[in-house]
Length: 116
Length: 114
Image 1 (cartoon, rainbow over the protein chains, first blue to last red):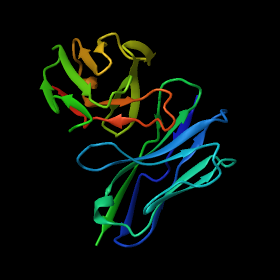
Image 2 (cartoon, rainbow over the protein chains, first blue to last red):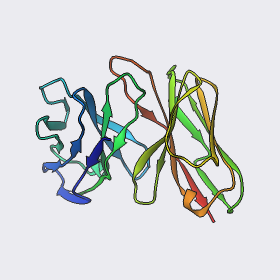
Image 3 (cartoon, rainbow over the protein chains, first blue to last red):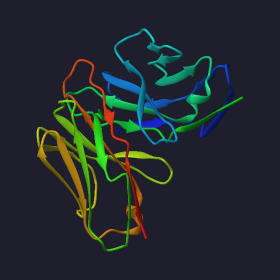
């Protein structure tokens, strides 16, 4: 079974600063996808970034980037130039790529507060 | 246009009642899901349908019955509601086997059982 661990229940960062959210996972599969989802107070689940395990290059989306360490099974999210609108719960998620439906396994989330 | 829409957004009901949550997607996806988010914000998959066929059925009480009349709709019916059913229920959809398959979530239904 796959597990996803987010060891930081809460984090705080000042506006314009950089913050890194940690995520580790456990799997015996070699072909899989990793995701970071954001859930603001509106409750909407928003995809932030996606990484294919077979790609060595770290994914980036504007101010969001990941540090994917496959051997260490680590998938951290870096948010640069933090903005107040980044305040949200952030969930790391994992999906194996065996042709089954997108059964995402989520971590327990990290609550990020961006302050002035 | 809302891609994945769920109704109602809030549902307050008494123990023992039966209730339904509806979900519709206009993305043309062939796969739909129900996820449950508990009070600690933990998200877990419940069901998945692909082209109206049930393909994922996690360990969920029989009181929960999903129904997919067509691939754009996936409803969730809950019988004999219990206090522990209080949670936020998310519908989601994706295009199975797409090169860049992504899950699109609805805005959730907050169910409160009193």
